[in-house]
Length: 192
Length: 418
Image (cartoon, rainbow over all chains, first blue to last red):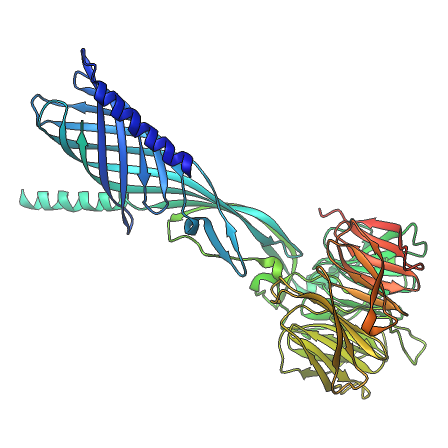
């Protein structure tokens, strides 16, 4: 739990450092702090994420991480690629993220209640992806607000032990669920 | 043009709505029952060469033979004339069998909802003598499974499956079927009969009990009486509704029936064998409770932490000198007691993972432990003249308790769990 928080905070810290250095020659380091509204299957939740990358010409290539609260709390860690179009401070862009979705379930999300007592689930990482397009409202080339609309998929696997009956006796077997959760994202962020 | 735009917008909406369906691929294992008709089952009840013991159930003893139930599949016949070298000699295939009793050369067993009588004079060539159909209509399978009672389940086939469906809210209830699992029975040392035909020895957790020329069976909430005067052809006499569910065990002793339920021990007077009458009740907290008795006391092990409810694990010694008002003498704390058996002043208790415990029960208010067979997880025991047949997780053990301070294992039939 703390490791996941630490990982995200480390990424944020690194982003701030590289952003502060701004050793721009042909390109520059860029940080995006973004808040997303996730609208999926009968549920709306939020996500916060931070990406950092190197901008070159109209491309930004980097990595990011965040906290995703859609149905199961997870920590997506992903590669981030953006392509800007046009010139000036107001430019459209497209982006794509691909990475790993690390489960970080709450205590309630871990529990399954049996006839008596509870059993605790185990989780495995899944794939995280997010693609979309957006529009910048920059005050200058490297700093300013942006908004984007995307489509994201996160996957994870939950497993727990259950007791099943074979007609004569009972034994413990594993039941697993491979979840695939699809959401539209409406992002608001600040690039610096 | 406007119509095309509207159609396009509608299509896009449908496509996008479909994109946000959360899906789950669920992988699990279950067992599917394979049914046969009753005619097919009857035709296939027969004995054959011994097979490995995999899922043992209740135990019954007559003479030098132990009859060990293979739950829902049949009965193993084990010759223990030499307790140091017991031999698994035969297996009788009886689908749906969980309970049994032996009187003379006849074996009575349930075949799902029926009572079947077999001549076992030659264990390797048993002969089916009679079927009484539908006498156990309320047969309950574990996990709340309700079977088709017009047919008989002969086999359960493992099915590993994957299904994909829309993701719902997290499943919150898991079927813990093991809570309804029944363990094997413990011993009753009563084998009375006024006739030349003798009864075998059943146990405190058995649901079949023999007393004289009657076979008594219990179901969830009733007591059934069968007349076995002609041992080869039991005759159904009557059903006595007990107005009480959760009935678990029956232990006949002299002319009394000690019936264990999850909430207490009932005492029925069977001096009129065809018309047992409720005489007393010893109530206790909701727990599983195998029971045995002697002339003065009933011994009840209470086992908590299961579907029966409760969390106590103890032995209750109950004074039954006044059968109408049984009173608790003393409770003794145990770990996870199940079956028990008594031979003279020696009381043997299966205490789960603590093994088989041997007690001196000469003084009911001061039952003291004298010995232990540790290292085996025990469920059930029948004590017979110095040899305790003990069902444990890994085998049917034969334990010599002639010296109650130093019981020793003399032989074993291994359970394979395959």
